Image 1 (cartoon, rainbow, N blue to C red):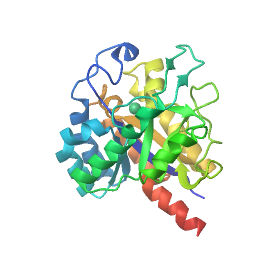
Image 2: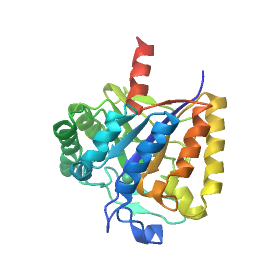
Image 3: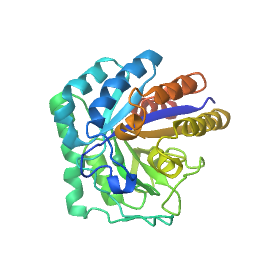
Length: 279
Ligand SMILES: [Zn+2]
C-alpha cells in the first residue's frame, strides 16, 4: 500500500496572542495570514496537489476573498481550528519547557466548535467536516467523550487532535495511525493523528531560519511514510510557513518531493476513502 500524506495548514495568526511571541523568541509578521493565503494557493496550483486549511472561526470573515479563491481552485478543503484557539484539553508537557496550558472549561467548548461551523456555512456555503484541536494532545480526544459528543453533534466527521506522545510532547510515533472513536461511542468519527514533530516545535529548537535542515527532516519523513505505507498528517501553520520564507519556496519543495512518492489527499477525501474501503 502506498503511503498517504495529508497536509493541514493551521491558519491562526492573531497578533499579540497566537503564536505567543515570547515562546517564538522573536516577532512574527502580523500579516502572516494574508501572505500565506496568497502564496499557498499559488504553490498548490503549480504542483497540483491538495491540502486542508484549518482556519480559526474568528478569522473567517476577514479572509473571505482569499478563502473563496482557494476553494475555487478545487485543491483545498476548508475546515476549522476552533473559533479562538484555546486548548480543548490541558497540555502538561514533560519537556525542556515543561509547558502547562490549562484546558478550556467544558461549558465554553461548544461555542468554540459551533461558531466556525456556522461561519463557514454562512459565508462560504461549506459543510465543515473536521477540526484540528489547538496544541494537540496525548491520546487526542479519546479520554474526552464529552467533547467528541459535541464534535459529532455539530456535523463533523473527523478530528485531528492526537499529536503528542505519552510525555504530552513530540515526536508522536508512526504506530499511531488513524482510528475511529468507536469505544467512546462514535464509530463514524475518525481521529487523524499528526506524527513526528510539529513544525513550530522542531523549528524553534533548531533555529527558525534553518529551513534547509528542516526540509531534510521532512524528506526523511516522506521516505518513511512511503516505505511503511503509513498515513501522515503533516502540520504547518500560516505563520510558520511564511517565517523566513515569504514565497513559500521551501513548502513548494516539500510538495514536489512528496507528490512523487506519496498519495496526497485532503483530510476529508481521506475520510471518504476509508469509509468506502470499509463498505
Ligand atoms: Zn494552532
